[in-house]
Amino acid sequence: MVKKQKNKAKSSPISKGMIITVAVIALAVAGGVYYLWTSSIPVNVDHPVFATASNVYILATHNDQGYYYDEQSTKTGKKSISSTNVDPVIHVPQGTLVALHVINEDKDTGADQDLNIDAFNVHTRHLKYFEAQTINFLADKTGNYQYYSTLHPEMKGTLTVDP
Image (cartoon, rainbow, N blue to C red; front, top):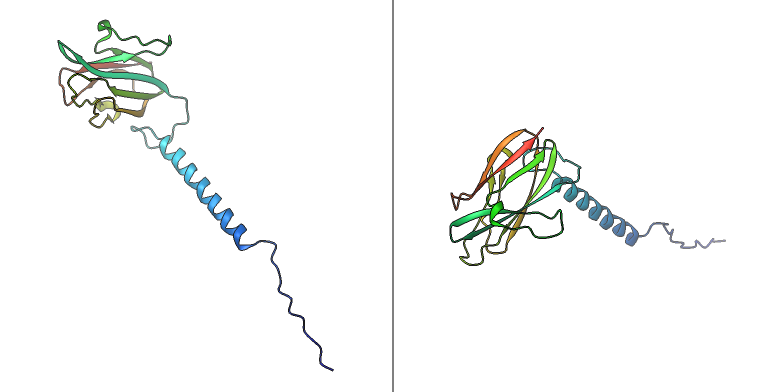
């Protein structure tokens, strides 16, 4: 007597589609973690800084006397641009993570603008009209530091890091 063998395909509780789905999700999570890790590294240190950044807005523009920087305060919720704040002194406490937002608002001449703070390795690209760039840096050294433009030497200001 010949016994008939039944062809039973063993079914796995984990399908090929499930493995692919889990792999895609794992890659997406790894990519997100990598992005968060690298974007939390300020330009002047080599490790991530997980802190809430202090926002500083600098407008690059000009008037009939020449090119200048102006600070835009958002503390009152109003735009506070005036000729009394030209090439402003910016005060931040030591140890502050600063998110420096530089905006080219020179609509009349259309000139490129930039901003540099050598002590903290802050260097924006050349910004066209209404372009903006945000650079994060850690204000880890006390003192007064000049910020300036390489394109327009008359544009300057001071960053003061208070103890």
